Image 1 (cartoon, rainbow, N blue to C red):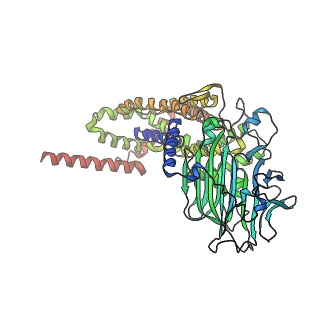
Image 2: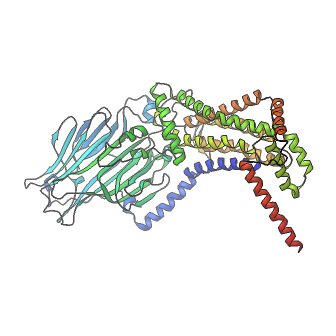
Image 3: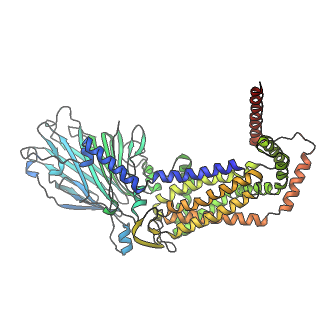
Length: 623
């Protein structure tokens, strides 16, 4: 590997660092963004941000006037996965508990309470009907329970004149899906002739459920599926307000591992969504809000059908819901689990997820599952790792001959000729200088794929391993009360192990490359090695807040890489390798015009063109 290759690898690492940095702004940047957004909100007087949903005053002389109230009663609908609390005031879902899951605080405290995803204090749901004489906002009316079974409840507003609005909720066993049918009857003469929709206003102040605000907030975002453009999301950082053009199939209030989501049988129109960043010490992540127009049949013959999903962001489970939700198409709910850009997504989609799921179903501890996946990935790339090492070893044993070329063609004025001769030398001895790049080109996508997979793997949540009590969040070797710049309020041991192993691996790699270089390249390598040694330091400040599972994976992966390099160095006989190369040279000796082939040949041709151009420029100057 020459200096250009090393620079390329450094740039790849910098891209990874830059990608993470851009995805995770500093606290100062978040504060600046919040100030800028606040100024914008003040200028625009954004109702959606300042007051996510507007409750319209009820008309005491209008329809259902006798049902106007500020207090309702609660009724429970549950199965083996969900416990829904429905409130007759507004006829809405007011509280959702996920059975079998806990918040980190309850997990640490050993409490048996289920995770509260959605509650009456933080959420608000309104259905607003635009009638000829009034705007009827259901949040002001107390519904009656008119039907109830083990799996469904009907809440109704009715009067003696035959006017009725009913909300029917259906929850099946073994499902996180809740169907809602809204039907208005006897009201066709009260609607304007232009009115064929219901205004749906929905907001939720999403609570922090995990240990670390920074990491959970990074993967929490309001997400929606546009009919035309597919799945979109608002920014994970700062505040954002967006009006969506065209129809929308669903809107999700998503945090790192769970989502509250509403799906419409007929695409929602005039959709506006907003996300407002909450303060780190508030106990909340974001304040989400959405407004939309739902299709309405004024005659009451066809209900307005919605479907809620309250549950975990598990890729395979969400993918299995395609074809099982309302509407006539796949809703692609699995897009809630971000697996990275296309190449990285394919690695996770068709390898990591299925291997991870298979190992998980064997009942193995999550730390062992990550270990096995790491070893499998290392085994896959080992042939290319070995090829890379042998390529470097061949260049190492040919170094004396390269030194002779440096002495024969000294100085910058002979650089082009020296490089051409070097490429010819390698070709005659059967060595490919580019052979060391392939493993890195294969390993980097895997590294980035795991960077996207591990933070979204809900299976790691609240799974302990060694000293880490929860592999989905950071482990705390030491912790303190005050946040320090760059490092935060803790020290992660898995992060330290990852960075320490990275330092050792970088040293071994640089030593391997240094042994193949001479002359100017060797001098340049001395500068580059300091850049490589600084990378683990950068990684420490970047990954100290990341999940212990991710740091553990990188630690094991680099440890395997270092052990592989040590083993290959130990088992490679330089004397026998040189004899093999000399045999290659003797086989090519009969062909003194032997030139590089493949990529090396194109590189040599480019060098020749540059040399010819240089000579023409010199002749032009002499004239």
